[in-house]
Image (cartoon, rainbow, N blue to C red; front, side):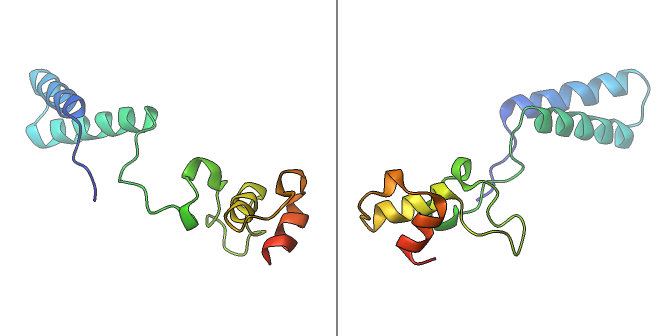
Length: 107
């Protein structure tokens, strides 16, 4: 479910809009300036536009390594294969290479 703007961003939007209007900019243009300014700050701060989708097979986004970003990619990452091997209780998984993990989990 998408979250609304943070109180900080709402205050920032209102401030930028009021400042633009004080400089003699029309209300529509002031709103556009404020929205763009807040959007840029929002992006610079690394804040997501919407809530993230459900992670691929329970793997957190920080460990996905861009999986799903490029159709026809090279398959799961070593970390994803390791997590699958962990779920399947594969013995010796910590010393396995990516190829060995793929064979062990059936990829």
